[in-house]
Length: 166
Length: 286
Figure 1 (spheres, each protein chain N blue to C red):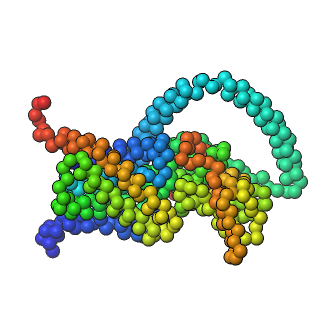
Figure 2: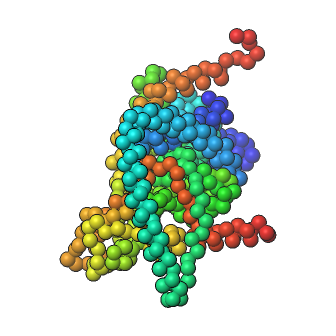
C-alpha cells in the first residue's frame, strides 16, 4: 500500500477506535487496529515502504496516546520486521489466516509494550495490562477479519494501472 | 565508504527507523515530549474528525435514548419538581452558611483563594492505547487551557491536562497508574495520596497508621500538590486495611466520577498552570 494511503487509513481507524472505545467504555480490552495494519504491511509491502509506513502508523499511535514517547513507533517498526520474517515461513492468504497472523503480532506487540513500559516506569499497571491482553488479542483478531477485505480492496485500487478508462 | 553506504542503504534506513524511536523512548521514559509543529498539525487534522464522529454517534444514541425515556417523563418531572424545591431550600440555607463563613474568614484574616477560570470542554475521544488512561477534550491553548491544569466535573476530579495544543488537549485520568493526587479525609482532615491503579478504584497511600480513617469516608483534594484546587471530591474509602505493624494503612478509594462515561468537563486553573501561562507569555514576548 502506498505510504499516504496507509497513513490516512491509520488515522481514520485510530479516530474511529477512539470514539468506539469512548462509547463502549472498553477500559481493559482495546482493539489494536494499528497492529492489524502493520501485520498487513508485513505481508504485502516492500521493506522500505513498509518500514516507513509502520513508522508513521506507530508515530500516529504515539501521538494519540497523549504522551508521545516513541515506544509505539519503535514497536510498529519492530512488529513489521518480525512479521515480515515470519511471513516468509507461513502462508497467509485468507481472512482467517490473516486474523491469526494479526493476533500473533498483537501478542508480541502487547508483551513487548508491557515489558518496555515496566522497564522504564516500574508502575503497578503491568499485571493489569497482561490480564487484559487475551481480550485485546481476541478483539484485534475480530477486527482483522473485518479489515482484511477492506485493506485488500485499497491495495487493489492502488495497483490499477493509471490512465485506463474504466 | 560511499559505495558501502549505497550498498547497505536499505538496512541502514530501516535500522534508523527502528532505533531512533527506541532511543527516544529509553531517554524520555514516562515523561514524553512537548508537541512539535508536526504533532500539532496532525492533532489539528485528526481531532475535528474525532469530534465529528463522536457527535454523530452520540447524537444517534441520545435520539434513541430520548425516545425510550419519553414514557416515564411525566412521573420523573413531578419527582424532579419536588426535588428542585428541596434543593432550592438547601441552596438558600447554604447561602447563609457561606455568608457566615466569609465573615468568619475575614475575622480570622484568611486570604481568599482565587478560584481561577472554569473552562467548559467536551470529551471528543479516548486514547486508543491501554497503557495510559487519557481522554482528548475540545479545549486547548486558544481557550486558555494549558498543561498542568486540573479537569473536573461537578461530581469530582477527572484528571490533569498533560498536553495542550491549539484547540485540543489530552487529559491523563486520575485512574491512570501514573496519577498521584494529594488528598485528605473530609471528616478527620487526615492527609494522604490517592494513586491511580488502572480501571479499578484508586489506592490510598501515605496515610499514617495512626490517622483517623473509616470505611465510607469522603476523600477530597488537599490542594497541597499545587495541581488540584482544595476541596474537590475524589471518592469514598472502601476496603480499609489497618495493619498491626508498619507506618501506613491502606485502602481503596471508589472514584466519585465514572471516567469511562465522561461527556462534559470543566478545566480549572491552578498555580502550576498559572506559571505555565506566564512562561508561555514570556516566551511569546521574547
